[in-house]
Image 1 (tube, one colour):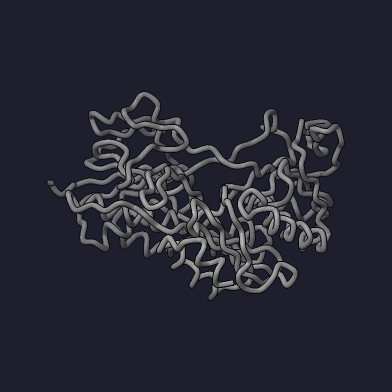
Image 2 (image 1 turned 90 degrees about the horizontal axis):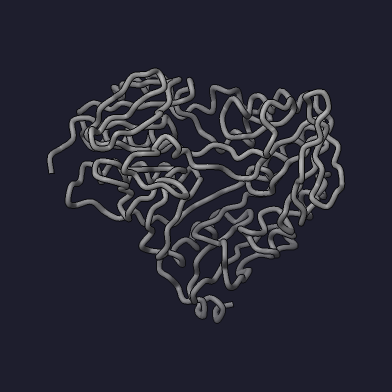
Length: 399
């Protein structure tokens, strides 16, 4: 295989930066063009719903690298410009400034955008939390808002609710599932998180969705729930998931669905790869297609893609043990593996009442995930149980 002379990275994201840094570290000396829709240099997203939102960090601290480190990569960096189309036969990416850039290899790292409620566009006081600018706008809002409604009880919604209430804003968490993160962690730990949030003053309205926003004079006044109840607020955060940024690929030969459809090597088409939140790839270790929206995966996948671009016939499947973390109040929640859809659950260290524990999850007769709450070392050690496909019977027998 001929070594590529030019690589285009669509997305100045964590994954995109990981690709660029790995290419240079592995000795690639060709042209690397990085295209970023935002005007910011690549930044870290996990702090947006925590340190940036709370004001503990200045905006500059979210940057992944100093400008000098980005300069040292020798990139053709195009910020404030987005990819608008792809001609995969000509190997050319069209851009929003009406220019185009050719490539030998293209990495799609365009991530995802926040999903919003219908009719919410342009309504004052309605926020999403996906970008640095989103976090800064919500931070300003929380300085004057007395009541915040958070629609959605995933990691983002739960973290934002905890920041808001600690900052003195009355927060209400609305979820169509029984408890925050219950679909990921299961009912036992979901109930524990309900107790934690309520102990800090967050109101939990679970098991009901939002029918519509309440609006007066172009500004939100809260939400109306599916069961007819009104929840009054002067700010609403919509945290109901995301949509992969794949619209610009329409008409190309790159398959899309729930993200860019890739093989086990994270390749989507000849000369086209994907990494980060936008990539849907075959995880041969778990035997299913995954799309993971978390920082660790973005970094690792970017590295894997860069190495596969340079490896030719020696490329390797991408088979990580997924890792997620969340900070809520004094709880450090860590997840290795895939806990969603588990068939069994067992606390093997600590206890739920103590709010310090290690829990293992079973699927298809093997340990599929480990969740730790304030058990950093034990949770990291449990990663090996997932990697080895440890039989569930061994875990149960050892208790």
